[in-house]
Length: 234
Image 1 (cartoon, helix red, strand yellow):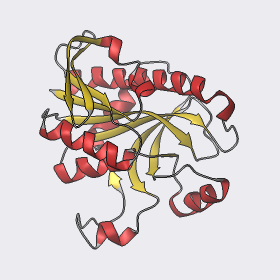
Image 2: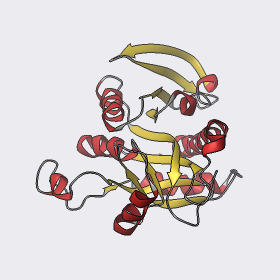
Image 3: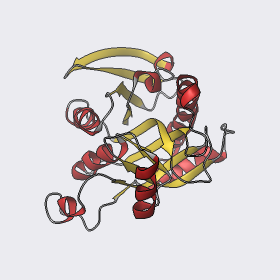
Image 4: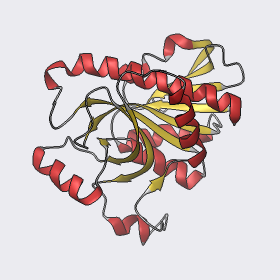
């Protein structure tokens, strides 16, 4: 079993790197891929990297994980902005479905890849295993499952309201849906795990770097718990 763990930024990747055992580094398309075993999980080989922010960067990295490294599953781990009012900083959202908030709907439904809706579904087995994993640990903040949206821009207050009215998402980021998109057309199981760094009520801007480091560590802990469940039950 080989699992790709894709992070957007280097700070989101940082908590994973010290845990990789017998690792090696491969450079492709100006990206650095770190391959090895995560801790004591000898039954799972991981390939992890940070792709850089935005949809295209994430899509490039995802396709390389599939074509060049032959991963069986891709997990997207990192941070996000909270959109739902009930979410607080350091809560974590695990995807059930994902979409773009800045792509015309008919682009996906009337043209390739001719989807039935604009939503990319997360893998149902991974969703269930993530619930088992979370039940066995005590993560900081609450963990919820639901819809994520992705787009290329930072969200203003006006933009936030429009996105919430149209999609009712729990989180917003710049990569998750594009990773889901590439996994969809390649038939690769996918799940996103995103910890909240800022919300409408608690902007987090003044402490963003500190929040990002802590949120990345929380996302890492939940991802590791999920890896253990995958090794046991997949």
